[in-house]
Length: 95
Image (tube, rainbow, N blue to C red; front, side, top):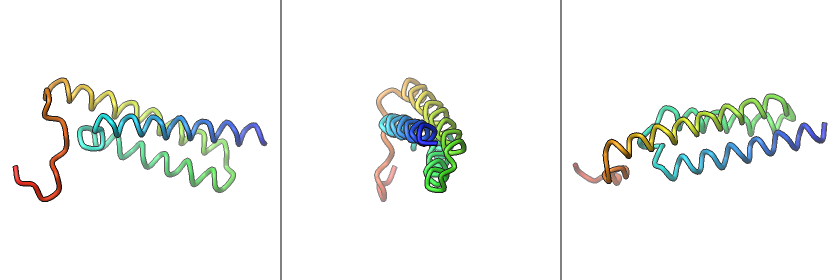
């Protein structure tokens, strides 16, 4: 049980890093569906870990990692298409 819990924590840590990298590429703005899905899966992984359901925590963490990487890839493609105009507009700014 201890090893399973450790594996789940490692999977969650990997998912957190993947979500952070996706956020750095502005995936929350450029690929919002995939990015939001990654965040939801990561939150669910944390919930399952808190419930000591380590297998399910790992599964959700792996889903979060996959979606975060998908969001990062989509954001990078969007950056390539848009050129330098990739940062989200500031709140209240007019276009």
